[in-house]
Image 1 (cartoon, one colour):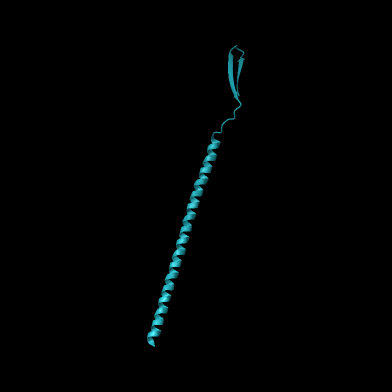
Image 2: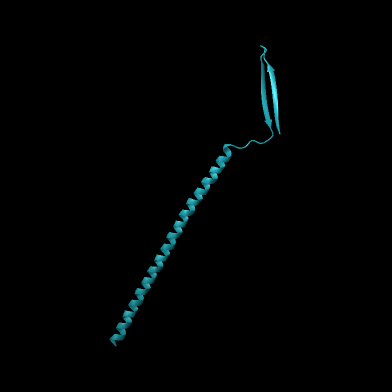
Length: 95
């Protein structure tokens, strides 16, 4: 509901001044406070994405290191198998 109040005053010299005041029951809408909250939420989302991206990169690096280590173990096992085969060949050829 909106209400309009008109106030008339007369000063000592006889001049009349009219003042109109509009009063409304509707709540005022927030100005800067809403924008500040939205900017804080946006900043939190951006920081979250950056942290998640860096953590994902660390996971990929860890997985790559594990795969490389597994390949090296496989290569070492192959070399050991080849050495055992060579010794076995020498033993059987030497008899």
